[in-house]
Each structure stands twice: as structure tokens, then as C-alpha cells.
Image (tube, rainbow, N blue to C red; front, side):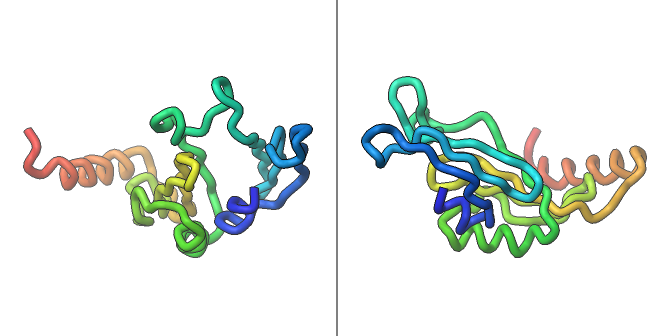
Length: 134
């Protein structure tokens, strides 16, 4: 929980520990206007993505200033998966992985496009990505 306070500015809303007084049984955090809950690892049922070999889920955050939050999270120990860039759907967007293996996309919405504009911008973006691929 301390990591999420440092990296994303999340607020600790309460912690409950196992009888050993050390293992986190339940933690509640608030980030912006949303809450998320976490727990420590309790094999074999409660494991982190790192212990499971990866994750198929990405937590998505919309924030006022993606560049500042992204930099803060990277300096706190998140691995940069995709640097912040302007995207065809109108967001300034990047992806991080926290030290526990959780994937976080972080974005600030910058532009509203019509469906036609977005389709044209997507076509252009994917054409750039597929250079050299058949």
C-alpha cells in the first residue's frame, strides 16, 4: 500500500492484518474518485501476477496530468511498458508495470474525434506499426 501511495498518490483508507500482525489481509485505497482493494499473497489461492507468471488484466486510470503521474510512478519503481504518447482515440496514454506485476494504463483525454476521424487516425497508426510485417 505504501508503494501505491508513493507511485500514484493513492490514499490509504484502512488496513487489516492477519493475526501475525504483518501479513496484509485486506487493504482499501482510494485513487481519485475510485477505490481498490488489495491483499498480501496467501498461496495457493491469492497470488500476485509475478507469482502467476504474468497478468491478463490492465488497471486503467484517467488523470488530470498523465505525464506527471507517469513520471512519478516510474521513479517510484514502475517499469515502463509503453511510454506516454498521443493516441488515435484522443488520449495521451502510457502503460506501466508495478513491482508486483500489475499492469496500469494511465491517460489524460485530450481530443474528441468523430468516428470517421478516429477510423482514419487508427488506420494511419496501424499502418505505421505494421511496417515490414506481412
